[in-house]
Image (cartoon, rainbow, N blue to C red; front, side):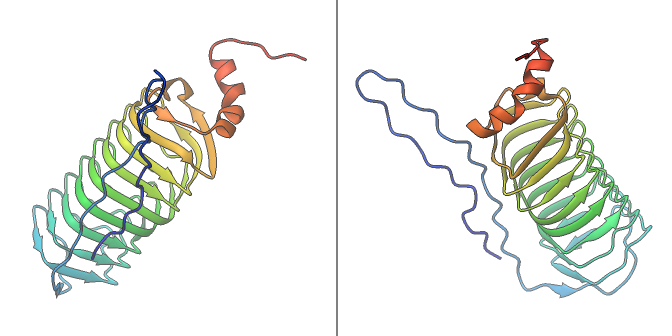
Length: 239
């Protein structure tokens, strides 16, 4: 599966007449997922420390199963149910997760590298302490996503609704949000480098606005956030 060039920024040329060159827009590197011909999974339950290579999991129900420390390489998970599934410290490399759904899916301390997550419907998913590199989350709706102390590098959120996501203490580097609704987000103690929020359609920050250093916002977003910034530094605005 070939990923198209979402998230490309437009570089700025060098300034003229002694003006300083404008900084380029943040750009997240995209995953390069090219799945081989996949073998169908036989339907057995997931296993802790299991090795899964080149498999297609289709319409599988993994609710309540444990795959702690499992490794998924060149796999596709299609419309799988992951309610309360334990995937702590699991590793996903060159994988597509399409149409997954579940409440309370535990992916804490998991690793994802070159992964596409498409049209997910998740509630209360745990990804605290997880490491995501070259990951795209496109479409779907994710409520109460826990990304506390996670590391996100080259991650793109596109067309997804994120409600009450917890980025507390997370490190975000080259993370792009495009056509997303970001509702009641918590950025407490987050550390950001080249985070692009300009194309967020609904930007609502519940906590941690003082930790947006390293992010890029649009002029209109800045106006919307001005009262929160003023409150943070103790400025009263009166007519």
